[in-house]
Image 1: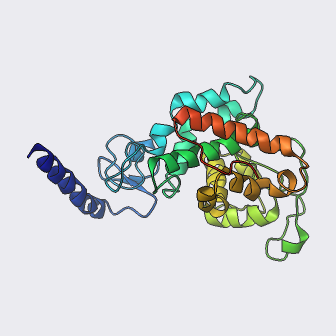
Image 2: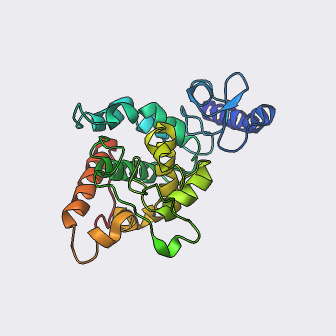
Image 3: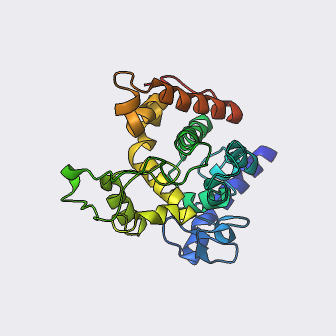
Length: 268
């Protein structure tokens, strides 16, 4: 009887959520705050959030922890603790910036089992840790033009800009900066440095790349994400196997931290 009543209450709460969302009238990707206003920051997506990609809960549609509950302050700052005091990313990369960015990508680590969701978070931060040296670097050390002439007609390179790695996943090449800018609302080709100046936008660029190229590969194993991000250098001919092993090491470490099995097919 008690269980039946509890289930009925849960159903009632979930059933009333769409009504609250309708009253708030938020666009997709926005949170409805406890006061009925729309936005993407902690004031909207944090405590008391009524609908949308709220940080505090996984919603009525499924169980398990939200991204915010998995990516705790201790986990995020634990990654940065390995970066030197001189690192440019120590103040730039923050958990709050990541959580604000994640509100624009409610599909990240969403759906499937709790184990699968935590694996995706572990995979994302494994690549971020490797690419940035524990959230140390905002810009790639060896800067270059990185203009792919075969895609230059569609994504023309600005003569004064270089499309070297920037941000948590070190977004590179004009054929990535162009569509990322179009999706995120900035001039990716004319002003790529925005990714090194705005931490929320920087995390959004990483999440954009992840959702476009790697999110759908997670069921194939972590190795598939390595092939997607740098397969030519790390997976073909064994040119940089040490780099590949470094990514796998971080992934295993984070899966262990989240207490989930890493799955199969870890390397490429």
